[in-house]
Image (tube, rainbow over all chains, first blue to last red; front, side, top):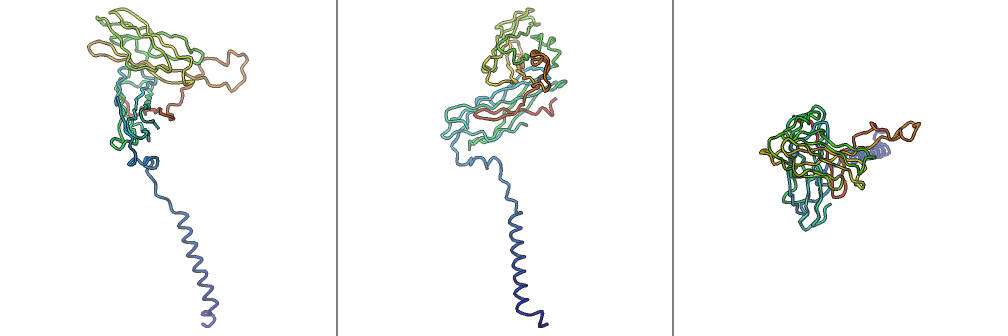
Length: 93
Length: 198
């Protein structure tokens, strides 16, 4: 018993314990996944913008067009606010 | 980014596959930094017809359904014959085209039972080496029928093997369709997925 409770052993045990706790804390901080930011909000603080959009046309009718081909249409976006207008995302549906 | 007072563009491209026909209704959701309207939808509508049945369309039958150019055919006019198969004269009005890329000569009128020509040429200083565009015109028949005809400038695949003659390097039939989704500057292009089409 005297051997087990020697001050030297207590100090060594305390050091090992502190080292293990430190390693555990470091490991947790390194493996911690940062919260995923929304891609739109990450690009632009929209609530601070004074940009204004004017959209002359929102839908386009091709009428008849051939299959096995590519057709396209260009939509105009006008910037009429106090800040530049940014197109943050276009998601085809 | 679109400076104040300027305009930007979003181009939507729809790829209609072979054998696909029927109604087209597609949309793209756009997000901008406008607090009052940060999200909105752009819509494309239309109806596909069978590519090889363009000569049976009404009220305007077509000899061909599209204009296709290779890089060696820039600045050359190509023609499609259009025949008015209705009982009334038809007036043709351009609705949308690609002024920076190609030029269209549309007949103002096609008399009943008569045939005219639509001519298209790709501009020499077209801003892109290859593209897929289209133009849309409308007729004054009771249904105000619209027609959209594709105009494509294809690119050639570089030959991997040495060619026996310089002409072979420009052989036709080695075309690929270009990428369809790119962004940059004030303009962005987006391919609209055609899955789920009718």
